[in-house]
Image (tube, rainbow, N blue to C red; front, side, top):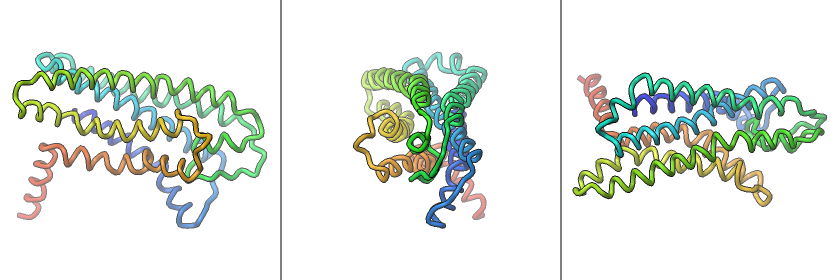
Length: 252
């Protein structure tokens, strides 16, 4: 569990590093400019980290599923090698699938004025300004959403339905509380991240203003990386105990 939390933290750091510096410059200067190469680069790392995080959340749900539904075989199933394989596959697929959106976008013809009403180079605002037909990119978005959004959502829901069924079978209330506490943090993060992601890229946006779109984008680009450490720290006794021990050590 801690290994996958560390991988999720790496994803959050990469996403914040990719988005936040330029966003702060735009906000402080009431607007800003970015070169086409930098815009495509930012778009690529944004897509790669978002897809990787989707897959990592799916892997984390599988980890919790094995821990609660098949605890006696957990150590033999979730070995170090298996965890490394699942993590590496998530990163590889994330950075590979991002090319399906980024390469077609970079081949579009932009003939100006190249102004987007957003705080970073996101796909949807970029697709509103090219002179050439963006239908190829839109098809790519749909294709990427299948392995990165739809399939992980189905797997995560399947895992948690079985987790809830197994928790309800535990006779003692303390046992049920302990079992649920091990996966509640992940469920909160999944709900926030996937909820905003689906509302921006999957749900039709014809009646959605750019202000609402930007607010929703803030939730999964800035808010989620900010609250992930808080959620996992405040709801984890081991992390809190380690923090208290470190504070006590420096005080003495």
